[in-house]
Amino acid sequence: MHYELKNIILRKGKEESLGRFHPWIFSGAIHHTEGGKLEEGDLVEVLASDGRFLAIGHWQVGSIAVRVLTFKKQPIDQAFWQKRLAAALDVRRAIGVAQMGNVQSSIFNVQCNDIYRLVHGEGDNLPGLVIDVYGSTAVMQAHSVGMHVCRKELAQALKEVMGESLQAIYYKSETTLPFKAQLGQENGFLYGESHDDVAKENGLKFHIDWLKGQKTGFFVDQRDNRALVEHYAKGRKVLNMFCYTGGFSVYAMRGGAELVHSVDSSAKAVELVDANMELNFPGDTRHEAFAEDAFKFMEQAPSNSPRGEEMVNGKRSNGKWPYNLIILDPPAFAKHKDALHNALRGYTKLNCKAFEKIQPGGILFTFSCSQAVNKDQFRMAVFTAAAMAKRKVRILHQLHQPADHPINIYHPEGEYLKGLVLYVE
Ligand code: SAH
Image (cartoon, rainbow, N blue to C red):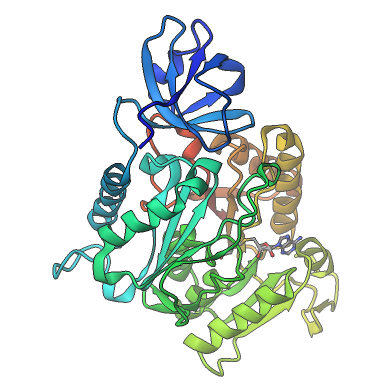
């Protein structure tokens, strides 16, 4: 532990947000630094303009200059990481997604579920760190230079906390760390090695490609929302747009859908959906996957107004778009605040197409995972789309991220996943 930390002294009045336990310090709030030249990833002590101790955090270049680890004067050492990770595991046990000794959770059957998020950054008071668990493998991702610097200590602490249930830790931060920091980071195992890539979510099996897949290999955050799709799927014709590994598609199949079409622009994703379908429903012909751009796919599909016979991906459709359950789960349209306006237009355009084309009595699951777009802005974008398409629309459910992606109450920015389930008359 570096007991002699470098200091960051804030401008007068800029300590206010720390008083409310907000874990970020923006670069504009800093007056000066003391104790030597700062290196990216350094632990720093943050002081008010009158020298009062405020917090300890990781410093890096950028608009968020410090990510606060603690508001107490305490060493940031192995014991500190272990305590934070143990607290995160306690939360997952309370939710019922992580095994609790021999006790069965009443909410989830953990035998049927070995995929969960163990650490969700600020939501677990570990800003800059994500850990997803797939069976006996943990995939660790650093989003800050500080967490990258601490990766080995973190891996050691994780081993202590998880015990025998953990066989491997894969570190996957090549694309999540600031490029300019030039850390020369590489993906690789920090502990053990794992090859078995099949994990279970609510009893359904998925190949998880933590080596090459997007994010940590799977979108863990849609678990509860996928279960809701299963609930609505019976007898419906389902279109799963931006399907990636086909999570929603596999649930829709189990829910008794009549037909399920999965669309993703990435050919690799389509391969994954097909593989996951084979794993759960071998030889089932209700499902088909298409490697296509979502907007192009929607342009091709005939609208709901009878216009004689048209083709839907090579099939006769009698002028109707066949789908009466549509899932739109696009990638984040706005990664930063300055992209907000375009992102909102993107959501309106996409949803407008779905409203125009969905069958009467159809159900639309529509999501935004852009952190920069808040719940009200997203709802407004979808409202605009409904009005443009002139459809009668009811909100049935308002969806969000699951409990293993908790939101730190002092960090409302942590609420990133928003969804609406709509009934389209
Ligand atoms: N619904 C998925 C996660 C979606 S992630 C799940 O439950 O796991 C977003 C996906 O959209 C990615 O797989 C990406 O390849 C795909 N994508 C991005 N742009 C696209 C586009 N224009 N058309 C179709 N798919 C696109």
